[in-house]
Image (cartoon, rainbow, N blue to C red; front, side, top):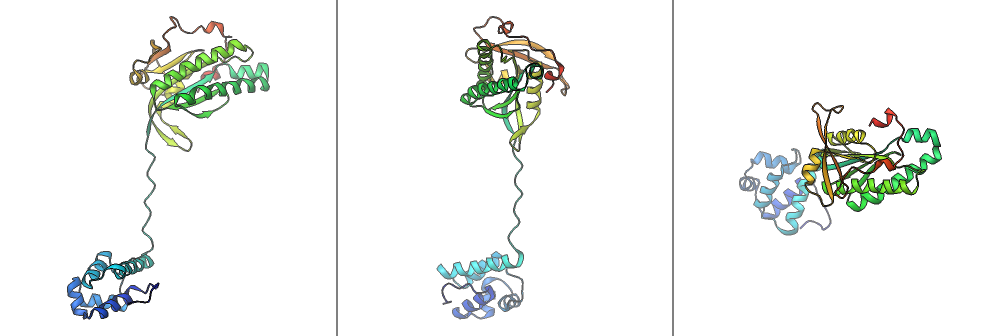
Length: 287
């Protein structure tokens, strides 16, 4: 037996177990199916460390078991590790695309509002916009990915929940504006669904681009969605779909069929006339 707690070099351990078993080089070589010359080089420690399958055949030929087998196999693995180092790490897999519904909401006329009423008033508007977005999106299972003052980017795993959140947001913005007209939350919302690749803390993909274009297209109080969103969500209790028409959108080769979504109880689009008209500025329409 070897002294407890020691890990001798593999070649020494091999010779020790061979002599203890009473086998000659020839006998062990024959049983392990290797040449006598190769076995002699292994025992002398002058050859490359044997492969794992060779170590296993030597262990079987020496009839090792229990602690002796574990030590023998560990010594063989250690000799390979010392010679060649640890096996190369596999490269981290590329992040898999996720199929998500993206909602983008944008406050209309924010830049003009800031110029007219100052940074403090604009900060109050942006804060209220953020508060209401959080209050509606999170309970619907959505995630607020990015908030840039007058714009919010959210994602959902459910198309139905995304549509419910969008229409609830518009209702909350309308109510907040009625209560405090000095902080007008005049908002357009666009949604699309599709694969997107995780990048840092966000996503990249065509679905985000289309949601942004639809948001730019949406008038105050509008919720505009792609045909794909309506197809996936199908019928949603309390909501109705209305054809908006075909739109030629920047970055998209073919016209996009756009659908307006609004609560079923409303016979006409939301009463946006009750909201103050946003200033006309082209920069607020670019995403």
